[in-house]
Length: 348
Ligand code: SAM
Ligand code: SF4
Image 1: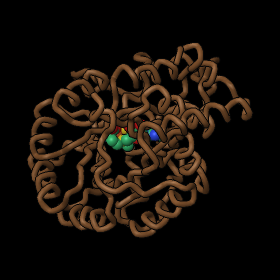
Image 2 (image 1 turned 30 degrees about the vertical axis):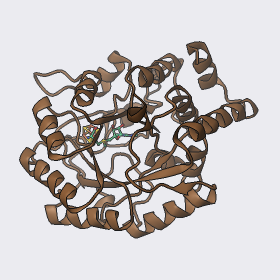
Image 3 (image 1 turned 120 degrees about the vertical axis):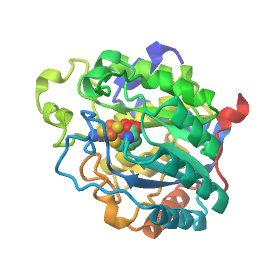
Image 4 (image 1 turned 180 degrees about the vertical axis):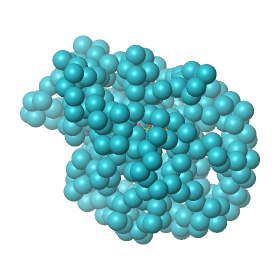
């Protein structure tokens, strides 16, 4: 698809015209990744974070949240529950928690691989080549790291680097790919200051990075963050500002599907937060083929507050499983079995 066409789709709100985009995305999804919806069990195992991203409630400077780290036994109980539920993958996600021992994480990965047949996806932030190599050798299969926005100036404004170093997630994604991980990335939509041209560049970048997994979700303001505060100040909103709406999220997902036909694309929790009754189903009908039921124990869920009013914080893992199965079947799709590996990798 030409860039001009991407921009036209991003800018139109004509519901009737958009039907053609939804249909094309759904058709491309069907032809390239089929009818199965893969389930990835999400385990948010630590909310400690050493970074100060201007958008995220887990940032180190937020003294108002209670921090937790799950023990190995707690994590394994959730992982085994996910395996019982026939999820093909467990996603281990946390803040960029440098207090966790790197070898402890490697041992945890080895244990999951020995005791289950689950694929292991890591989402632990920006880590060194040595750490990423160790975890890959321990058996981790996939890594998720969103580049958040391809506009470098905006990225640096909202994502301060660690003191004395640079933050270059695009370069790190290349390292992750070289190490043999399936590579997942993505962006937030509607970051204050993000223009339609930026978002078109983001979508083109999904293609040039040859991603196996693409996550796009709306930016949701958190009151205990710099961007949450600043979002109230109109001065940082660009004249060509992308709105952080549900509709914009569907458009970006549909375009991602058309441009990267074989990628795995989740209907994200941030989308479900904007529209809890039907956001996931609409996402699945407009390009997505993955959902991420939450495996995190109920007592920790509310503490993993990246943004407020997150969907599914009062449910148990069993509730999430039943809910996702029901939603998938209600739109005539099948619950995926097995690991749901990247069709993109298999093709290349
Ligand atoms: N710490 C790891 C990292 O940054 O990659 C993984 C966890 S982090 C919470 C996962 C993702 O949450 C980020 O990549 C970002 O896109 C998303 N996120 C953070 N704050 C958000 C917000 N206010 N609204 C929407 N998404 C947000
Ligand atoms: Fe930490 Fe990730 Fe949140 Fe940034 S987005 S503050 S690295 S948890």
